[in-house]
View 1: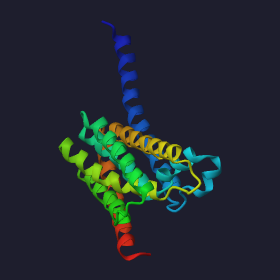
View 2 (view 1 turned 90 degrees about the vertical axis):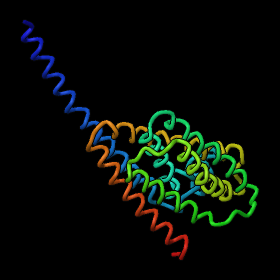
View 3 (view 1 turned 180 degrees about the vertical axis):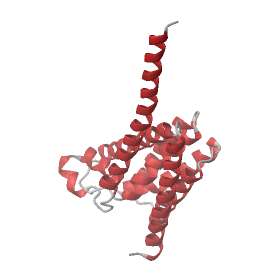
Length: 222
């Protein structure tokens, strides 16, 4: 009864289940290429795009800085790994506190160890992705809030003198939010497949190693 229909349905389902992992692989590959293309020029922050406006200069600061880029995408991935309300509370905490940190940076209040704090955030977030553990939401929120102070301070402190502060701030907050969403999408898709989880953990190890390199640079220069 319904033999041909059942056969067609089974074939369609089988094709779909093969297509979804392929889509996930393409997504992960695209994300990896994006990281290599966008995050490599660590020092290429604002100067080249300032003629296009303060908003664009602000966007490029988190996107074109490898340390900021990796940390902010990682916040999204960790949020997806935790799941539940962490999907929005953790990134929202980061963006909110980073805005305050940016204000402190614009005022140059003298906060120290900025590069160390940023590098340490990359190491910790990469390690969290590699561990793939469901951290308590409050712990994750507190951790990213601390990290956000350093990232925000760097954004505000490195604002070009000719940039319009409000538009520049709106730019780096927008760029940060986009990177968080990117991490959320990558993390959410990967969580549905065992190979995706394994790929995320491997990426977490790589990010943590890069964080160690940033830490070494922050501590000893070079």
